[in-house]
Image (cartoon, rainbow, N blue to C red; front, side, top):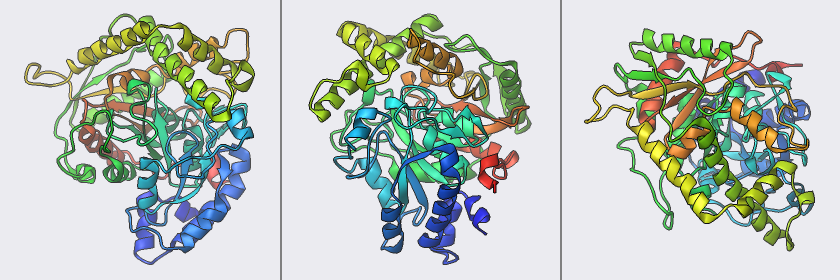
Length: 487
């Protein structure tokens, strides 16, 4: 029975609570039993909050859409006052820094009725597409514990894939929702820029690169959660249009015949495994069988891939410089190279060196690129354009742990490897478009291969219609990572 409950998505778990078939404490007990069994192996939960979770489960939970469902916060971004918040950093761990306030998104999660059982691991400040912080050690992929779980929401994704919780908080500044979703066989949506408020601690992190939501087992969980949490808060720097109807309604709407552009060449990196290309073309054939038209296309960028990547790093370096400064203020002294990992320090130093003009140039380049990519989509002036873009989420299957080691003479080598691994995701942080990773294919070695669908700005509805269509035609709900069911 416990394994049956673990196999349910968050929507189904909430339904058995609302129907009286189960109750929040029973769901919590199943989650904690699984956590005690598998977390020592995968190292996903780094700050357990089990006692508080028991109090919440036994108490008067809000009547939200996920009442009684066990949940994890990523240890970066949203949270509730008093929760540990170490962001993968050794100094914050040493002083046991705590969330100073409830964030808006954290409050939304609590009011949804979710029962938080802990905080999940993340690489230091969310920099790398792997979750191997020095402060907490590597999080291991439940499909193959010698491999990375991806990052930066790797702890959240590993916990969902291992059956501890059915849904978990995630954030995305360069692919950090979609990368671990792909690596762990889950669904992960990066919403449109400004769809999710980061109030009150942030307005638009790194000028709008970063957003937050969740990773989950099913498309309907993502739609239901987005319906609950989206929308601006007073004081946000900007917003985006309110959808005309609930996103869950899109799960049942036939998208009709769409024109979808397949990208089968790297966008910013130099690597794309043949197996990944084959998987992308397999998904294209699946879409064609559903009545869509798919054609391969190259996406124009403002400059070559090297220029695009360098401008992205300019924005990330500025963000790391700001983060190191803020953490220094929190601990009461400037941080040094000994307080952070080598790559963090190199990026922070670059952020200090580069001028404001260089930062604004990077943003301008990304805005030009956003307009160029927008021109590919169907519109009044381009009636033959694409409705959606299809790419692999990742350029390779998840590599071995240690692949992104930054302890050598040049820490930026880790970033170059990250660029090759995740070269399809960061572009759409820069453009602000919504993008979803769905677990469409499997590798010959039995590793999940996610496919990314990218919609025009503000068109999450299209992503839900097509990804739900794919999920119904080619279900992935019965796939289980080896760690999920192990004795």
